[in-house]
Image (tube, rainbow over all chains, first blue to last red; front, side, top):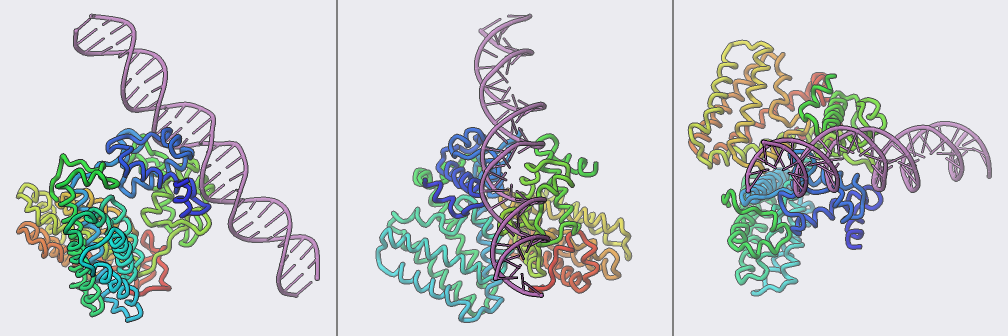
Length: 257
Length: 257
DNA sequence: GAAAGCGGAGTTGCATGCAACTCCGCTTTC
DNA sequence: GAAAGCGGAGTTGCATGCAACTCCGCTTTC
């Protein structure tokens, strides 16, 4: 039933594929299918209640997304991520958001163009203002933060750039809100949001003034707060495991982060 | 038979899908399937000699590649590109190659690491040295140029970044050698290569010295020679139509380039 | 003569059949 | 007792069947 609700995002066409894709994603991120493990299509038919055709289509899509990878002799294997992979994923997103921010600034958007972003920043200011934040505040932050990043992409005015950022954000932990929740329980959690919000404010300012290079640098640096959060999370493996997708991390190699 | 040879890149597994993907790509880039046109799966079964299953898989892959896009009521439609789309595609690639160049520089590669790139630059120097260049020289340039960009990605040492660049380069005209051939017949064609080669040399220098920011800026600017070539090509629609994929361009909207 | 509505060819999305292949455990051989 | 080799369960990749749906042209109605 839950799967049915989720799949309703594509009503009608591609229904079964959407269900399979979402179901597989959940199984993988929950660690139900461990990294390195071959994804058996018949087994997924049983678990997901759709036939092999949509399962295969969904696997193909997840491969592009990066969650699975073609196996040596056919089929697909759950991908394992090193710490360096996660860090690189964040860096790629930050770089592309930098490009989006620069394009947005260079387009010299009108006040009307900027109104949604400006309102979003104002809302975020209000959310982080109280000296201590509730769970609900963190939720609100996550929602507004997602909106900020969507607006940034929209202001860049490029479908091609939007697609590239979407793909970059699809990788586990690479999205703009991946680690926010991790800090909800932490005493210094609010400070992290305060810093990030200051960057939102500066970014809006740079775009408003048409300062492309500054906007680009700010957006890239903004993504690097996620880098720092990743580093903190890696120091506390237990907490990371609690997050969806945490089990995909193979700490053996590449401690570059 | 030609299709068979091409598909041999994936020997054994995924043979039919590879064939279908390559065949579809050729049909689309040749303008055989015009932009906006729905891609009929049964028709492709006839033309490509594989059944609907691999055709559908191939369409799914081409959708991620950006050549086709899901139709409003099922199926896939050949995508149309505006001039702005092409320019943005090049900019995305350049931005990501900038990231790769910076990472390469920051890794402080050893002389051994850099040897292939250094040799490639030396070869390129020799290719562009003569006062006039033959067709064969342009071919050699294209080959070496492709190698240079591959080496750059390799030196960055990141599979995640490599994937992102690969996807960005897959878009029509976004690849590093997309426009080189366009200038083979032009009197000033050699000068374009001379300028680009100077950038290769500077990029190698920056990476060698560990100058990350400089390497990043150089790589991004290097991609912008493709932007200029695109602009020139757009001024001469006939020549553009001659290139594979030229017919995908819809000049109506977005003359941003 | 124009517009509405019907019908059928064509298409998609999913399910399933089938041969070739992979891979693992057991048996057999030395 | 160890290693090699065999056999079968399980799997993949492709082909095809089938119902639901879309879309276009024609007929029919007013």
